[in-house]
Amino acid sequence: MINSTTIDLMLGHRSIRSFTDETIETSVLERLIHAGQAAASSSFIQAYSIIRVTDKATREKIAEVAGGQKWINETPEFLVYCADLKRIELACIQQGQGELEGHTEHFVAATVDVALVAQNVLLAAESIGLGGVYIGGIRNNPQLLADLLDLPDQVYPVFGMCLGWPAIDPEVKPRFPVASILHQEKYQLDKVEADVAAYDEQMKEYYQTRDDNNRLSDWSTQTAKAVQFKKREHMLSFLQQRGLLKL
Ligand SMILES: Cc1cc2nc3c(=O)[nH]c(=O)nc-3n(C[C@H](O)[C@H](O)[C@H](O)COP(=O)(O)O)c2cc1C
Image 1 (cartoon, rainbow, N blue to C red):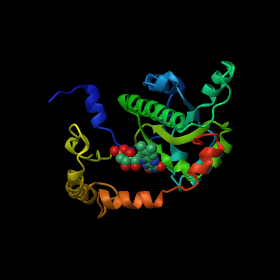
Image 2: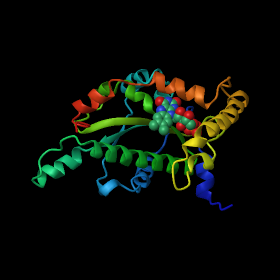
Image 3: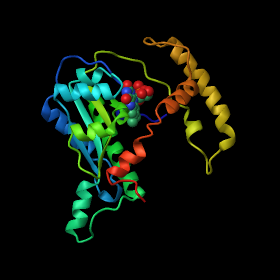
Image 4: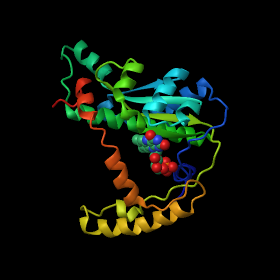
């Protein structure tokens, strides 16, 4: 089996939600973001902005919006990753092409761009012993985030990220086997059900035996609950009000 320190690092990922009091030097944070920006970018549009939130009161409001996630208050660094088409729109205007019209394709490109940067930042952070967690909970009330952070139209907050020095060492969560994810030549729908059932067995064992927060659950139970609970029906109109996802 091939291996490298990078692959080891990636396979060792687990979200961190508890941090020591040690801060992250600004130069270190900037270096991590620089590394994040090395991610590929669709047509090189670099459609992202990151808002660093240090203000205590703002953090408290965000933690509340995210469903009371206290690590947002406690983390040394809290970043809000935004898909940002504003810069691109300004370039279009400057080039005489006018404003963006809200094409779905541009929304997809910007959302993918920011996700790639964020994952690169997290991986760079993990490579120096930091840990972190994404915070999709900010989309419970994205309008409040837009107001708090002065986000212009053509910009939307995709997720937050806590970053800091881990105060805990949780276990790695098992993923689906590669054979379930990697289809050969064509999508193999006939094996999906059996693959999920097998993975559910593995995850049941994981949830029952893990050190912290152990419970009776499996992937299907968790996932079905999550998607029912997190429909966030405001998203389409919110995005359209931002000038996105209109056609
Ligand atoms: C886009 C995104 C949003 C997430 N939002 C949250 C969140 O709001 N709160 C949280 O505690 N974890 C959040 N997570 C972390 C996931 O729960 C976590 O990655 C998943 O359970 C797998 O666990 P692991 O990262 O420890 O391997 C999010 C992850 C992603 C990728």
